[in-house]
Image (cartoon, rainbow over all chains, first blue to last red; front, side, top):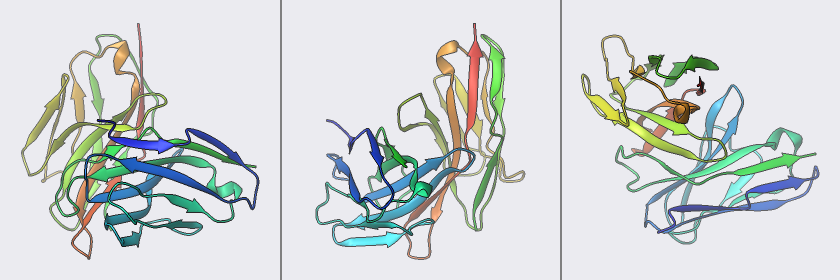
Length: 114
Length: 115
């Protein structure tokens, strides 16, 4: 039982490049989300999904796209990377979209944009 | 909107010292409250939670009590160990306008425990 798996662990991009951060879960959780972690700002929600085919914006969605074609996967796409997107990105899941169960986190992807 | 306030730290303590990390919140509804811990190079993991007023969450010697009257959820431990060195996040969970869970995090408090 792997839980929440994020790949890659580290990535360096040049400004303007695109990439996809992968997130996969094997817990059959309905709710999946992406956060970014920046010093002094805690964790901020980028996008979330309450089930396959359903996504919505969080607090800081600009510059990021998501899709949810399966229950298991929730990739985060950066179409044109900017230095302001240098951050640590976490995928997190909850068993039910409407309950108050805790979040389950992956180990993060550290992204540097030069 | 909802918010969570905690000091950033770092908080530096000697081994076996008493720990308190303060957390206060503002929320329009009746949130659930959480403490998460993040060890170096890892994601956050749940430390403890409380879902209603006066509930006490506890785990691994850590405790926090949901105080609605003071809108607080302070984290305490009687005797810290070097292995407790980590970043601690206070968080609240409420419902957004669509009825789905919305989690708001504090900025995280770094704890360093020295032998």
